[in-house]
Amino acid sequence: MPTTFVTSLFLGAALLVAACGGSAASDRPTLTPVPPLTPSSSPGAEGAPAPKLPTAEGIDVLLCDGKTQVNVPQGTPGTSIAGALMTEWLRKNPNSTWEAEERERHTLQTAADNSALVGQVAGHSYGKITQQDVALWKSETERVAAAGSRVFHTGDELGSTIGVSCDMCHPHAANTHPETYPKFQAQLGRVALLRDMINWCIEHPVRGKALSADDPRMRALEAYILAQRKGKTLEYGKH
Amino acid sequence: MSDVRKRPSVKSIETKHMEERAELFRALKSLDRRSFVKVAAAAFGAAAASGVTPHSFQPVRVAYAQGAPAGGAGKRESFHFAYISDSHLYDRTLNDRFVNALMRAVDDVNAMDPQPDFVFYGGDLAQLGQPKELELGAQILKSVKAPMHFMVGEHDWYLDMGEKWRELFGKPMYSFEHKGAHCVVLNSVVEKDFWTARKMSPMDRMKTVAGLDNGWQSSFTVGDEGRKWLEEDLKKVPAATPLIVFSHSPLYKLYKAWNFWTDDAEQVQALLKRFQNVVVFHGHTHQLLTNRIGNIHFHGFLSTAWPWPYAPQGMPEMTIQMGRPDPFDPQDGCGDGSAMIHPDGLADKVYNLWNRNPVTVSRTYMATRGAKEKPAPPTLKSY
Image (cartoon, rainbow over all chains, first blue to last red; front, side, top):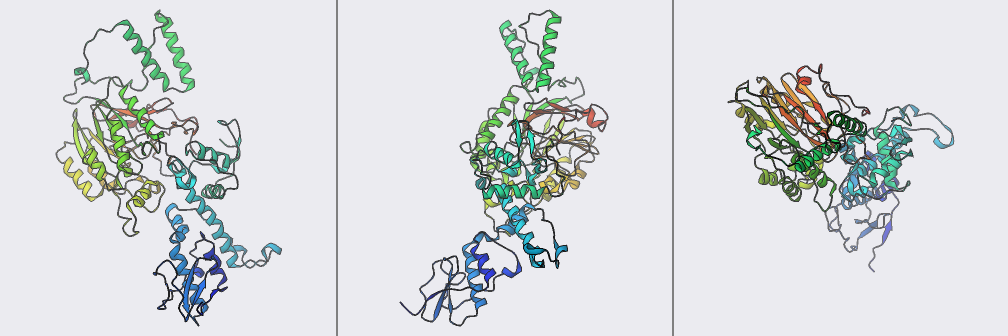
């Protein structure tokens, strides 16, 4: 073997973790990749998909996903390597901007803003609440709702066998009334939860397979539907 | 009038019996349970009182009772047309549900007696504008007995920008005269180019437009070209002529986020202002929807595929909503319908809601701004 070696670098932890998350995309400024490195021997952003054979003076750096790899000259600063890895990862994952796209397409409701809590100390779970904390709570919560929006708006993700998606009858989740569940569903002759009705719809008008309660798609759908009815009064049992 | 078509006939007692029977069942089919009991009792009572034999059926006219022909109003005559709209067909092998619904509507209009002068298709025949979907729709609608007129919807248009639709159905904008009324068909689903900048494929573009709540698309318009055509077309039409306009989107501004909206509505309405009476029929909204702006009366078409929820804001005052559709009744909230155009140019609009009582929005209701002949309010309202 030549003198090259493969290194797993642990730098810019947040950056790499985000990249490893696969579907996790973000528009948070901290995650903006720096411009790619373009050493003559590097596969680079626009290079061939398969990594080239390492050159004598370069180092192959492997991302923690075990797949994304770039070749950089020795002595390259860590931040530039991270930037190069991120660029390569984005190139391989063209759908990584899905969340921003989903928000733009389907005007999602925002999660509650907890900025008022910043600076407060609240025991073991919270510690001292920072601006970063509240931003994280918000973005993570909204991401689940956005994932639900994506399932809600595509028959394929929902598993429809007849090309029907939720939004065809419920634009912006209108007429879903999550705030009225549980309620006695006269047509079923028993009390139904929101997820029972979601599954009923999936099995009947959508003609798909019911989802288990802990299916990520079910959790996301519930999150989206509830999010869209922000501000409505809870009135369980209402017809 | 339809007199030309009617021949004097001698019918056998069996034929009469079968006709009456068919008519009764047709009427009963579209009633809910409570009204069914009422009608059945009335039929029985009437039969008993008139002393006819109990096996004679009482014809019950429900939807088309206003169809009395108006005699001698110059050249103008009242006429009756039926509509089918928003079928959103996929290929038959993918989805037979919407196909069956369209065939139910075809059966409905073919069973109308007297037959309507024409059947109007209100747009969105296809779901994703694919040639197979449009061809399937055209094929099914060939079995309509009355002559047909077609209008384009956004679901028919944005895959190939109307190429296949025009090949099958001709121009998207045209006008025709019918019994003294001037009828105009518009293409009101013209959107600004949102796809080039985003480098969308034709299918991406189609799917974006097909999503009612998809904010990437732009608003519907009739557009500069369309309005120019309309202005030109209306030049020769006297103001007293009854004017019937068909547009896929409502020609007013109801709710922008779902394109229950025409962005240049005011400019189009301005072109219609000088006429005494204008009735606009539109598709797209899949619900009972009524509006009046000055001399212009607006009526929506029902969809054969699925009902839309009512918009969370902007609802016109004149609208008496249809009852909340029951998802467990697969075709509830869907249907077809008809309209009787009177010599004065005003319309009685019939919403033939499947599995429910039909609802008539009468010209008197429209002319009196809701003071008279108010349709019954729904029992279970949407919220």
